Length: 248
Image (cartoon, rainbow, N blue to C red):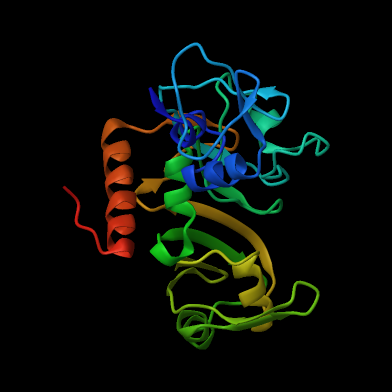
């Protein structure tokens, strides 16, 4: 038997914490009865969220995906170009971190809710690297401003923030690379806009230890054993550091 929150997490539905919230709100049933916090389930029991039956998947799937520009990171079926329908993968997976519609590059997609939760926590400061092409020559002054942090304001989104310091380097006359440890909505585009630059192309080339490499738009690959082990190790270490625990 396993705890119901872990069952839902292993099924790729959500993190354990989010599962606890759904259980507490009465949305989850087991064999037709409303579930309670701390409940355990065993093989053969029917678990539902609302009317949807949740099937546990013990085998973890973790994929590297090259999202093309124009594909939307959403599970909303009303969006015809959503990433889930685009991939049509035989196992139910979702994304651990979005890329906006106009951007392309690396996504990590998985059915492991705990991994998603660990990767998405902003306080853990996991690195994501991007290659960016802009409409004006990349100057030393521009790189300096980007690196030290840029104030971005969006009244419609109620956003007024200074971005964290980051690593930035020139790649070509109109191209630079940037390594972020936070994920504000359309952050790089907003940073460039604030400095008078417009992004023409934005590609994510690395998430933590996983690199896009020579993948082509639309391509999917399973992470290697080494990539998986290092990814899980990094997430665990960051979570332990956040709680003051030491890894066993």
